[in-house]
Length: 96
Image (tube, rainbow, N blue to C red; front, side):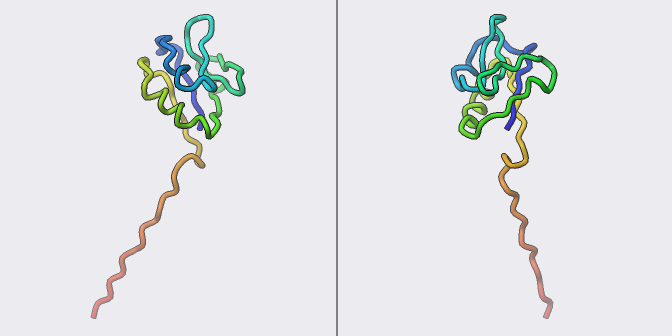
């Protein structure tokens, strides 16, 4: 899972930080940013602001995105984050 924040939409309420302080930080400008290994990624609008999220923080990041009043938290799922898709067994009909 990777996450980023659109700073133009951020309201600065800090709810994301309340839910997951390992991933979100608020800088001097009052706006939230994502952090990776404790380092804020503050390169708005570029891939430099896309933080990898440890498995242990996945649910907290999703909750933070759900409660964000600015709806500015965007989550990108990696292929291994998705549940496996089961292929249905084909139905075979024998005519007698």
